[in-house]
Length: 323
Picture 1: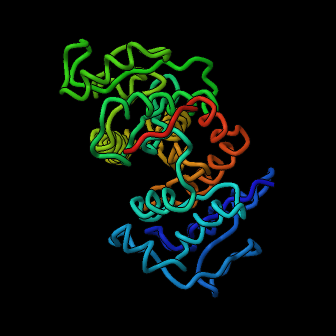
Picture 2: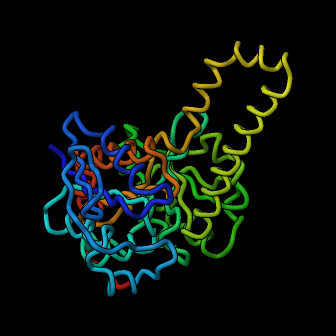
């Protein structure tokens, strides 16, 4: 059984939604373990009682120092102590990153961990990395992000030799700021299947299996994509329901629209890997539904099954460098 520690107290929708998602994910070799308040109803799931909560507005350093008995910190420590195989939290992303660095620690040779998010592209999902862990980066960081993203694509998405592109303001190699220009040169000289630059408009078109960028740009791109998908789907529903003819047409296209919604819905994957640590850490969206939590737990378990940490360690075996 793959034991997945689940922080029940950090999400916007309350612990009940997290527990509901964990219950849905239980089975098929997955054993969710809930970390939360002692009186939380877990409907048979194992509960590790905690007394503190890390809020979304808590500073990461303060959370680690003053809230050691929080559900977030205790869940991360469970992975570090070998009591769980992976951890999932919809809580404070900065606190998850800080707790991962302090307790789980980096794989030897990893300069900076990065957030890898599956993006629902036209012909199948692609990986965006970094999606928010590192606002300021150096070119060598982007090269390592691309390598970690390629391992993610191979092991989780089943892509034999992932194509990699660098997110920039133009497809030409000479386009971009100094960071992208220097990163382009490093990627072109690497053993990755690097296909050059991609623009923001190409993200949902499936420009590459792995899209690499710094965490600031990646987070803006991710939220832009999520907002665009949400607005389009809501707008489509509104137009269908506006007239009798639209409602009739809506019945006819309902199967296709449901398939489209399922393919584009961020809840389909539920979470993002924090790659580069010695244990599996999955960060779920703060507003995650029960469905998203269930899929995030399954994503975490899949990473354990495919030994993503071990594969990354093997690919990145090199002397550690100071960040």
